[in-house]
Length: 507
Image (cartoon, one colour):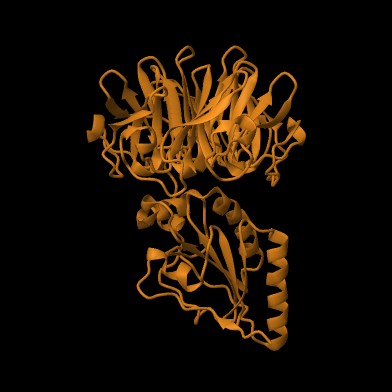
């Protein structure tokens, strides 16, 4: 008979979030416990969160989920940054900050994400690495509840928590804006108000024109006031037809906003997450997607940074066919032919009309993807390694970025949101030379000029002839940069407010 292994107790003096006190496995005796080992940059970890929320709500009287945040990037080790991730992803279970991988080592974890199952008597009964199958995990949870109910060792009592969102409600006009798109010809600024699950449309100076979406998460087509999104990210504009395309990331869908007729329609995806890692093509509305994060339109082709599949996808707008353009689906960095290349959570995409440029976030690198015949994939700058990150300006492979999420081609160069370094960097796509132009690496909210400015995990960049617009995500703000002087100001949006926070005005 295999001996049972008692779950190691949590170390003392760890920082906890979503609770007013440290928890212990001793006090959780009598409950099924799932430890979720995660790090907030990881797309696979983010995919696990909705599955866990379903289980913790369904079995709240007998199941406790505890997030064990074991950071990959240096920036993810900061408690306040983890708190912001808890708010951004609406995590409602306790999270312990696993400083120096102490808990990770005790449980012999080897990969993100890993779910560790602990029975009501405090013994480890199994683990699941990767995203896992919710039904399989639920079946195991239900078995444990039934077994220990028969033994009289189950504790049917909900534990009380004080959530971070109760301490810090998201009542700001914008909440974790992920991407921004500026269009000079029409004097419009499109903002993915990701934390409020909507798209905000304003003039380039900040006058609000439209709000698209109810502000409640969902997948609903219809009018601007009826439509629903779920953490939308990147956008692309068809100026000729006045159509805005949206990567509706957590709905695993692409949405089309008819700006003239004020209608929203789903054009790709089924609303379900795809697990088909190999290259694939199919009819757009019948093809599941996996966390589309950013978009770029080139002629009648819509290119998609498909973060969840570690690939670049393409949708042919005339035929409605969608499928893999580059990447084999393995999380890696491989240059060469499109069908042999590999990416690692591509999260930003732009073009100069001749080549696509990609912010490949998990390997902290900038990639080039050809558009012509015999197209090739190349690494422009960055190490190309999963743990090759840092903050070093330079050329090519000597450059170090830290989880870059946004990228824009403007003024003959690439502007990169080096998110976890809280900087904006400029890259020459031909030479791979990278230099810091904005930010001093300290998280903050400070206007000014050049490297005297501060940002907080910026993740979107868009450019016009005279200015850049930056989605300063954790500052819940849009920052405007004068390209000539590198002067940074924070854009104001008079009258914009959080959903359900506006005070109606009488006529």
